[in-house]
Image 1 (tube, each protein chain N blue to C red):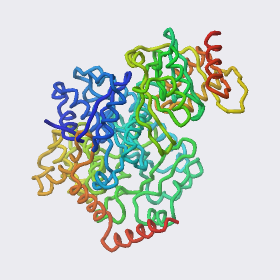
Image 2 (tube, each protein chain N blue to C red):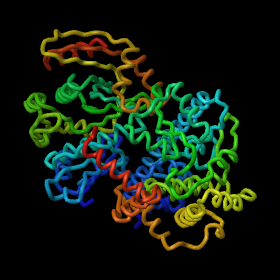
Image 3 (cartoon, chains in turn purple, red):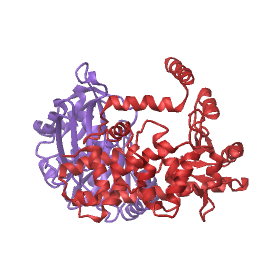
Image 4 (cartoon, rainbow over the protein chains, first blue to last red):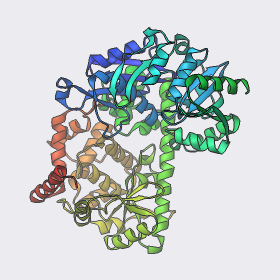
Length: 287
Length: 342
């Protein structure tokens, strides 16, 4: 592939290759300041034309790589950046066997981590992005990497994928030079990526101990509420949030058991982001 | 500098050679190994050399993952044994599960997909009924496919277990009934070897014949490097046994698969340095280089290359599978269905 780039993000490294210059240029801009891998790469992502003429004629990007989803629809070339991001997510979700992968965002303070998980639309990314601008260190917005034996969380500070309303919320507080281009008309609506702040990028190798698991629920009509979540419920919800729990076998079971028996879990309801931040402060202060 | 599948073959053949690889070559090697389902096999093979930290971790993860897959595959075989035990028919494990259950080198790090078993054709109905009774169910497919499988294929339509979500392919022979070559299925079962878990595997010679049939007498050589690696490992396990080679020659002929067996020996020797019986392998054939080109059609990005060669082997796979008129009818039905998916 003519255009290529290598990227180190926390413990994982990626080799990205593309038929077109655009997506690689966009990725290298978005990830300005990230280190290059000093070892072979974990994963290869390919952005390729699915047929020969699609390289030039109404070009569309098929996401390929070491691990692929059969039958995934190709994307418009203007969304090449998103294709690259999805390609990297796919490698992690299907190919990562070193860590227990939780579909969760996470932030750190004083070496202790807050893990935020829930269905899409619950506000995982938005909350983590906001906390990351308010004195917390962003560990990651898409995957939390739990090391099965040590129980430590490893940062995976990819660019944060902000959707629709969350974009304007963050545009008000984060500097413009950390944003990627506005991507309109994607399958998930409007998307804009935000590079984590330099401190989060610089500390991408520093692990944290999980201290609180949070299951947020967002709804404009909801009253602010906090509810304790038992270990068994947290366990089941986290198995559902994990992409490779089954693949890790006994290691996955033991890692998750240890997590839910040693770390408290809470569910919160919130109607607006400020309300959520107050609840997080309250919970964190009472630990 | 070697890239892609050529790099993979070289590293499998000669682990010490891999010591000098650059970071970029390692990345390319890992990608090729994943694309050919040989990552864990490679991880076992290269365990003896010093490795970059990243590769050491990656290989450890791959070996662990393959081990979990092995346990799961052998467990699935055991569940099948339990379901079929009352019938008192011989159940012969095939391919990956057989290698794993018999503790053969070919099973070390091998990725194992569906469970493949061979039963006597006369017991096919009973076996299917017993599996349906025990929680397996038909994978949804249309009537044409179902009839096609039952009339012309060497296996039942695939069954999937509704709780464990694992597929079983129940074979009654090792090549489609429409293929020109007619292996002697009864002889495969008759000569099979019992394991102490109540299941059976093919005899060493038959195992190699089946592996060669799978690679060179059926299909378009997709995943061929892995299948050829099976052959290499089987030869290294069995090649030193007394009378193995004469037995192999005899069984290959009996199953009408002498050509594919000889070709598999030649190509394994050429690509993996497999110690084969030169007399049985025979002189290089005119088409051998073309097979080699097909087997090595992958670049350092893991992309399939050589589209013309691939197309050629794709056409060949259909040609091997059925006579021309039947193929025409089959493709016609498939094309009609694509037009009106009903």
